[in-house]
Length: 128
Image 1 (cartoon, rainbow, N blue to C red):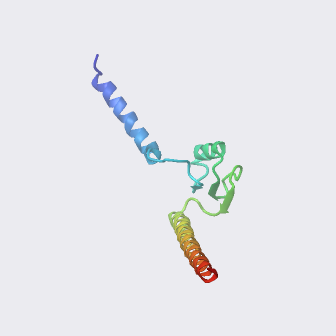
Image 2 (spheres, rainbow, N blue to C red):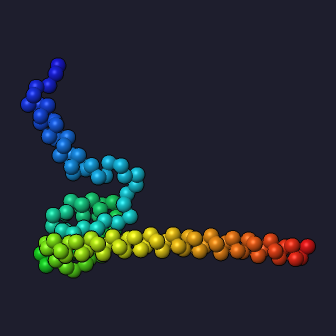
Image 3 (cartoon, one colour):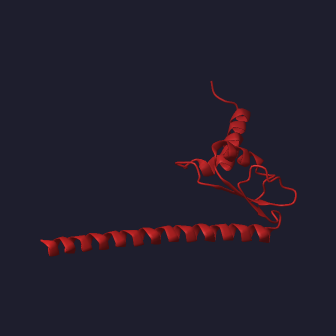
């Protein structure tokens, strides 16, 4: 039995809606380390899911927002486009700086380990 045009259209619109709302998480391999939320009233479901999964939440809280369940509240305006751009850019810059610091720390650690190995080999040669 085939589907009618109406059924196909309904299934297609449901698929499109799911793709719009869940398409971003389709390729995730693990849970996120944290969740950054601009409008806590609009994203209340994301807050509930994050709390349930134990994912820390950073959120912009306006005067009409409930801070309950937010691990790292940031007081501010969550309505104006310019303020949202500011918060997102600050978060992006902070994440990029942290990634660069981690890479630099790993490089420094590897170079100090290599120095230690060279010094140890030189000491062994000297003692023998």
